[in-house]
Length: 134
Image 1 (cartoon, rainbow, N blue to C red):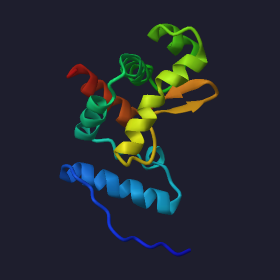
Image 2 (image 1 turned 90 degrees about the horizontal axis):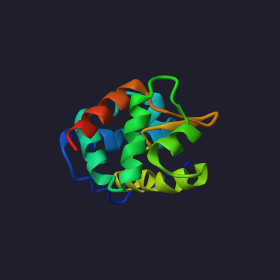
Image 3 (image 1 turned 180 degrees about the vertical axis):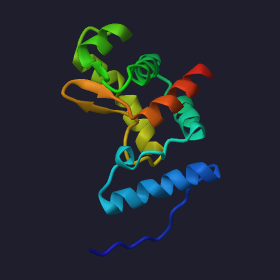
Image 4 (image 1 turned 60 degrees about the vertical axis):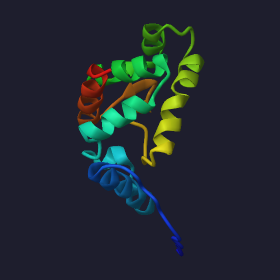
């Protein structure tokens, strides 16, 4: 494998720089941010939360974070945020993916497994704290 890196510009705090570099390394190593855990600091979560502007996406993130280790069924999440289908829910959550890529994060803060949205506890705690701040 050959990798040529010409320039990289990352703007942010020390913690955000570390998280972004971990994301780059994870891509090269083939691991995900969720597998590494701990990469979501409260400061990173606050910044992520502030970047997610869509009210439905914010509410969905908050509900996923509050759901606990079993997660929340996609139909229940769709109903809770006021959309009438799983497809509309996925569309509303597209903004989360845009923010994730714009911030250079390796993964979204949640996964979808067997139609359940789940969030690692460390990430959930950081998102819950960020949501309290608005």
